[in-house]
Amino acid sequence: GALIVRPPAFGSSVTTVSIFIEDGGPDNDVQTWQDNSFFVRTLMIYVKPTRAIVQTPVGTIQSQRPLISWSGLWETDTKWRLWITNKTSGRNPLIDEITTNTNFTPTVDLGLGVVEVFLQGITADGQRLPWSKVHRFEINTAPLVSPVGSRITSGTPVFTWSDVPGATAWEVFLSNTSTGQNPLIREVVTQRTWTPPQPLGISAWQFWARALVGDKYAGAWSPPVSFAVATAPTPLGPTISTVSQRPQFTCSAVPGATRYGFYVQNLVTGQVVANVSGLSQPAWTPATAIPFGAYRWWAIAETATGFRSNWSAAVDLTIGDRPVLLSPRGNTSSTASAARWLPIRNAIYYEVWVNLVDPPISAVYTRTGITGTRHEFSPALARDRTYRIWVRAALTPDSFTPWSVVTEFRLT
Image 1 (cartoon, rainbow, N blue to C red):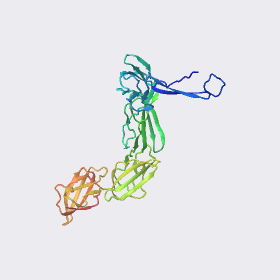
Image 2 (image 1 turned 90 degrees about the vertical axis):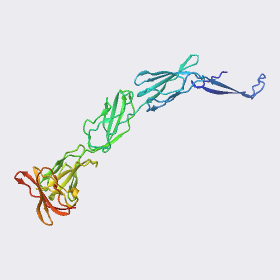
Image 3 (image 1 turned 180 degrees about the vertical axis):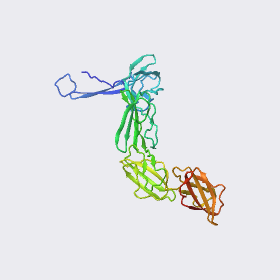
């Protein structure tokens, strides 16, 4: 009979073969010296490999310069010819080198896509052994997107990201995590930078990018960049001053916003006189009159899902027909002895009038032609005295507002 044994292909191995032979029983054959007997023969087959087996890397990796390792041959002085190609880009050979080691780390980037590795052993006498079987792995390096800030005011942020060797184009992906629109935008670009074609609305967002090799291969997506667009509305009016005690507060519309709010605070007392929200339009008129005085107000926008923008810039406002003094008030340090007030619309200059309370002396200090809304007393007022101060605005050389409400202060 015959027995055919096939050891494992290519690799070095030792195969043990045991042969068991048994006589099947009495057969009335006088030539058979013993019935019902058996015997075992064992032999070992040593396979000497002639091809290497590439062991690493395997599967899909991120590294552009991975460690490539392979099994050796029995000959201790074998050299290796290493041949590497990038099947996706068509670079063949990408690397063609001779090495005496059983591992190799490229000194150049292998590029995005499918990489193929071949090895050929070269014996000490120069004999070239068969090439190894092709070993394939993928490189899908992800780019890194630069952060744009966790909460930004611009609806047109500029995204940039790192290069990926072998990339010929890029795919960008933008989703709105507040509304669940995923993706809101997905497109291919040729540069490593991208700006939304239209301003993004106030909301929470995530952005990704990945490298492409034409239409042949797509790399891994970058880690997401999370950010919020919190563009504040622009206050439109009223500004400076108004004689109306029920002025209409307005602000600009904000992309993505469906509701608006306004906040009004008395500058002197700190009292909140209005805090309204949920307005369908960026405008609000108080239902009741706001007392004459100095105020500061802000506007805010909000989405249907409850995402709120930043508050707008503050606007200082005088409600009434005369300036409102902000300082000095009460006990005042001599180092802070300056008068401040809110402006009046169309004022060409201001006048200040100061009386001494005890002893009562009128007009101990007066100034006219003040063009700003702050005035340093010069010469300085005497310390440890109590004063009363007024301010008024000149609308024309011959027309003035009424004097402000009197304010009393003591200079310490």
